[in-house]
Image (cartoon, rainbow, N blue to C red):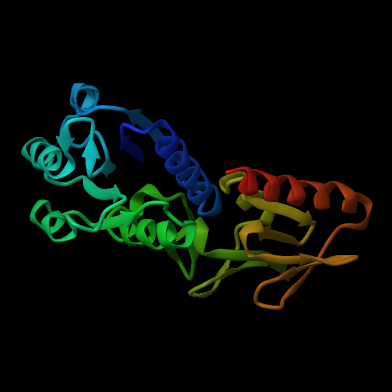
Length: 237
């Protein structure tokens, strides 16, 4: 997913970039971020279908963001526009260019996360998914919805936020399909989405749904360190 940020303030561009990187890490999303400090540089790259989302400051140098958005709409009617601003004065005008949101600076991550969650309803195919065979049907599962996967008898149970999916695909095969930056094979029979870890216990990871996932004893320090490194990346973002 290619995302544009157009803002004449370098600090605001940096902050938005960090928010996007944090969101993409938490949701196993591949993004390419393009940064622009003026509308002229944005329009050099803009073409239909090139950007999925455009973050647009309401005041860009000598231009008004609403007017820039109108020009964007003449070229691309499908990209999602999110205004960022220190003023709520143009919130109603944002609807005239079909903006999906209007965020007030400084932008809090929780507010930003809600805004990006709305965007995924339009571009759900941009999120990483895995395809598994279950009950003779190929099912696409967004990786962000997976809480953990466990081996049970001769099959795997994929525990998601929407329910449990059974597949005869091996855990080793699933491991090759899934994002290693977000998921951790912490045991021969378990793989977890680190986003759902609540706490590190002595011999287990405690998930936010109170499930305990065992950690292989021979590599316990390695797996704990991988989770700490993951947390560090999020905090740094």
